Length: 179
Image (cartoon, rainbow, N blue to C red; front, side, top):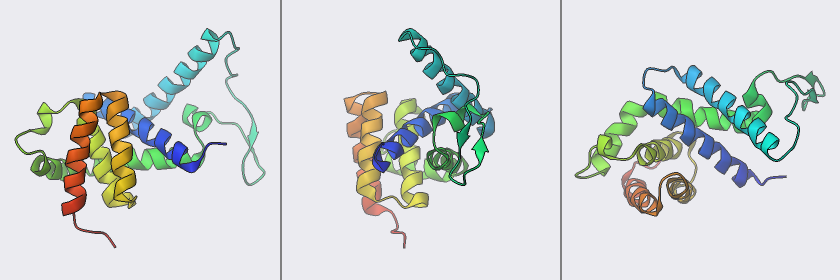
């Protein structure tokens, strides 16, 4: 079984991908972004299974939920993530998007001599995700910063990781501390 930190890393990775989709499709609703993302991930999983010569998973698999009730997930997101992981992921996405004007104002102050439009979409979305998680979720700064660096390096490049580290380190040192 995956460790909780590994699961949260996966949730942050998914959240970043959803935020990138939202950034590139500014007129799409958050519900549309979420639904489309989970459908894409399910299709990718099915294609990967087929490429390995495995049979794709059936359209619906009946499971037993923690309350002992039979459950037939219709939604691809329910088939890809536990309820807890999906809630964590979608909370990050919904929260970051709802708080985006405030987050962007903060990032504009922190990114001296750079407008947010000049940042790559990955860097911009990683920073939004991290600032939201720091402020709203209350995850410790070292955890958020490390995760953000890894996401930037994984989805962009090493230089992106260094830039994200600098911005978030500055933010962590200057932000109002939450109780």
